[in-house]
Length: 109
Length: 114
Image (tube, rainbow over all chains, first blue to last red; front, side, top):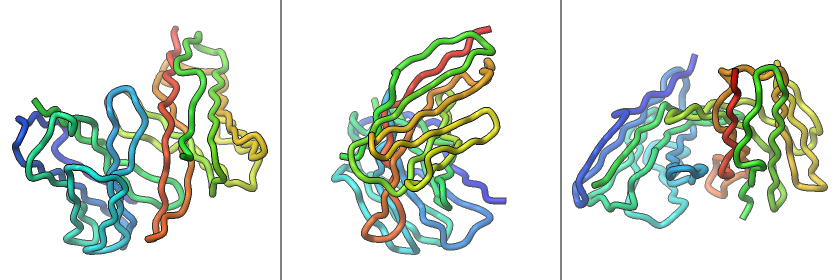
């Protein structure tokens, strides 16, 4: 069966520090992968999606970037975090419905 | 935008009662999906209803879709304390680069009390 992993589960980072969040998927090949962010008390916003290795599309302008170095690996990065980057980050892959990872709660202080 | 908007924002019921949540959206959709999120955790896909379907069932869940009114409802029958969670509707459309985009509403917080 397919599973999706994200780490770390929680992260507290100072403003201006770099960020790297990793997502890996098992049990499927060539999945469409997505990064979403959920601000406190709100719905999810699509940040990036990828339909294949090295293919990244950005949905909203922001301080973050994404990369897909391997078929089942999706990475969310930032060179310098802002306070507004705080939130709950969810990786997902799609097959009909979307299947979400457990998420990473990022707090930027 | 196609953002789904749930109503009510919060709902508190007793165990055994039915819970109904509504969702409205603005533009044409490919399908509409409902998700559940337990506090501080990832989303769980509940049910997908296509634009040409009017009603769908899954266990204690019943979803309806009215494309003329651009609305959907999620009914949870015989609720349990374990159903306490936030519920989101999401409208789905195809991205130009491939893949699909889900646009989420702000959710309904359901609390089921013993």
